[in-house]
Length: 186
Image (cartoon, rainbow, N blue to C red):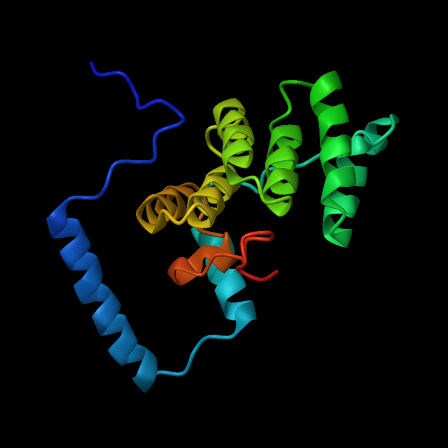
């Protein structure tokens, strides 16, 4: 029995025949896309809910448990674009709950927003190791690879993320959210 790949390695590339089959299917979808109307976002969301293999991953906050909520505060700071404050808050989560994948994921988000994709990738790798069935952590690793200019690794990470959670609709068709701090907008 072979050992699984280390969490720092991108998934291996798919076989050539599978990539060719994907290319044919994508070409056929492009032709059909011109002939058929595009589904609405509501229809896409309904399809994603149907395709989801498991219930959505709950993301509890500490405030909901009666404690200070540096996780929620970090998310709010990130949403405002205050990446330094977000990094501070996610650091508090990690200091008090080092096994929280969401603290590590938030750290990755903040570091990526601050323009440090190498450190962000380490944080996302830690989150993925703590919660291996959660695709969004691999999506963070894809953003890091893309910010470093490694499109092949980014594509493999996105593919792995979608395999775990096809409901991550912004990843559909390889359209990742823009990476903040990498010149990609956002």
